[in-house]
Amino acid sequence: MSTPPATERPPRRERRVIAPLASVQGRAMMRNRLIDSRLTPNAISLTGLALNLLAAALVWRQLFFLGGLAFIIGSIMDTLDGRYSRMSGKGTAFGAFLDSTLDRCEEGIVLTAVAVSFARQHDELAVAAVVIAVLASLMVSYTRARAEALGVECKVGIATRAVRVVILSIGLVFARGASLGHFDLLVVAVYVLAILSTITVLQRVVHVHGELSRT
Image (tube, rainbow, N blue to C red; front, side, top):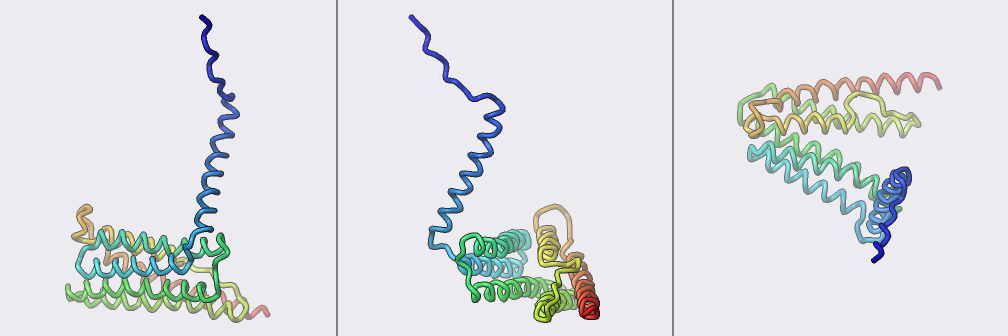
């Protein structure tokens, strides 16, 4: 009785090529399904807003760790809406405006809840630091927008939105009472935010002044 031939397997070198190709094809199929779906960039932006509102509510209730998780996921959604807009071709001028507006609101909403937490502890200095952090973060965005309106690209500075999100996320996740070790980094995170955001504003002012002086 003859033994059936074994199933031939491609050589190892070919398998190394086939696996990445299959992964790329899988991502392409998923991307095409998303593009063909009813999902819009504005829906992603609004989902990010909802998650940041949830984060603020959790911080208000002193549930810092859960608030930090909601803030992280909401911030990720804020980065995905722009990418999805470009990838799908579903972006609109109003969508870009809405995205930028919600980004500014969400950061302020969560920091407001943090300020309330500090106010309950009668930590006036920390509350003042939150106010400075909010104002400086708004100025970071404003200086870029105003510079670009003058024809100057202005992405310089150490405290970009991504950096600010990371700093605040660390502060929330490792806040006192967050059930994740015996840390209390929220106050430190707010001070760092206030200082770095202020420095970034100054960096952008100097940058724009230098660029305009050349013209």
